[in-house]
Image (tube, rainbow, N blue to C red):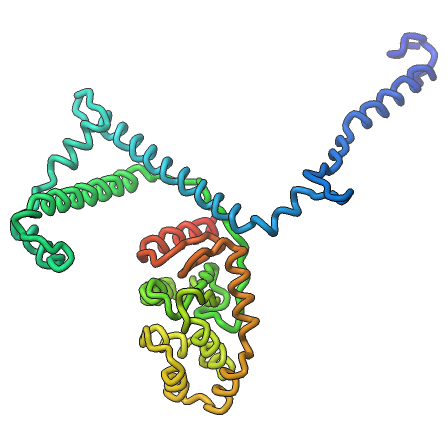
Length: 354
């Protein structure tokens, strides 16, 4: 008989003491692998024996925290943009410098700054004529400051165009993500494909000039990204400074009762500044609404609470002024150019396609 691996030459079964040892080892190992118990929740204050916890602060400071997160992202984003541009310049100087040891700044001077022509007298005079009432000084006194301002504008544009070309040539990818906020919306006030992957939630005020300025920009975006972007409207009347914003918001809701919210919305912005009661009624007549139902709705204040809910949810989401936009939860504040919206939309479309 061949001796077995336990060395006693009689049995392939290990001795009892070894079985006990192995069993205890396995038990000990399983104990060691169990996750540690979560630490007990600690209060940050007590009042008359009642504990206050950190999460109790959230409803009180949520909007401020969201603003801080947005500011933090913006600081990081600006720093990242500068660093990317610096790296691109360094790479271009090294690759295309024809053996010359050039710094990034020297390369930028050679490739961009030195090629920007000085503004002509005609350009200076044209700008002066366009701003003459605001400048309120003779051309001779402001000619050189205007020339310098024009040169700086040209220089900035030239650099932006050059950096954009470098990015395209080097396929730069940015993975820094802006903070996202979950914002609900009213399905009854949605324009565009309900199944569109991109949702713009707009908090707006019908008496706000910046909202009126953003109105055509958003319409163009919906046309450009037809089927891919939808717009959801929410009320945020700034009652302290826009006395007619609240009645206009209520009127738009009353028009919505008869299926004409967006048509009424457009009339309010296309006839901006005319928000008196007579004009609100004229808009209803122009849309052939049932005047009795519309006037009864408007006089009863049916939608005051619903509008206040929009305002409160906007505040909780971090809206501090109008217009405020959330593109798939990413905040854009103010009447921004189309490019600002497109940058976020394209990034979101790209992310969703991965």
